[in-house]
Length: 304
Image: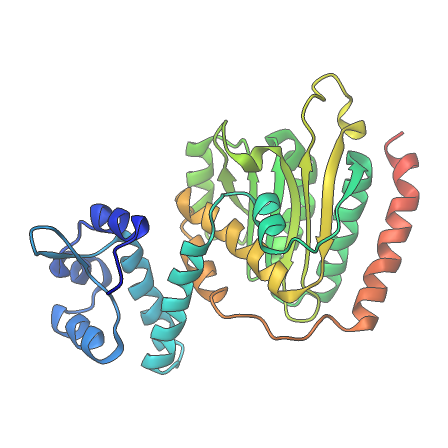
């Protein structure tokens, strides 16, 4: 017999919604929810010590994603399977950190110490290659501080117009970020990071796409408060492996969802499937590499 885990116990403590509450928040009747559970094992209620069955807030998002997928023409069983995979993927990550999770899950990725100016050149190359392809990818950018994003805001507004979803992370004001999230204009969703958030020390550009998935992630080494911004050194890594990029994208989307970004649950749902087993084609990687070389070559003059 399987013993309850600490995670199971935590879920039971957090489960507060009755089936009526779940029905009210999703628009799916209790009878239909019970039918889904009997036929498809979804949604799964938590059994409290009192014997009552309760649901988690994440179940609300999952049911809504099923409805969205059904409206798009997906079969119910397929829609539910994707929703379940999205919930499982959320539970896999230990730390709200792109750098830490990629190092843990993909330890074979090489790391390099790079200056901030070199990181900027790499970031611009990736951003421009993405914009040139305009393939409706999911795009994520970690900027550490609001002023860093503001310097790139015009570029990222343009990137957001050709992306399926776009999220940017920094020490944004939480109230302003929530107001910005409600706009109907296609712009980057600002995700505020708490003072103690691990991602406050990280720089990243993640492009989750079919043709050329890529993740550049870096962590600012401590003890550089007196170093000029362009000269700060980061431990850095980058990859075009689809599974690693998908993991990076899921971490970013999960952090956005936890911060209350309205678009994040839908993005998590679309990232639930595992990417294909292949790698980016050689021509695409070569094109990106050529762009990187040109941008890095100009970096010393641009930031001198």
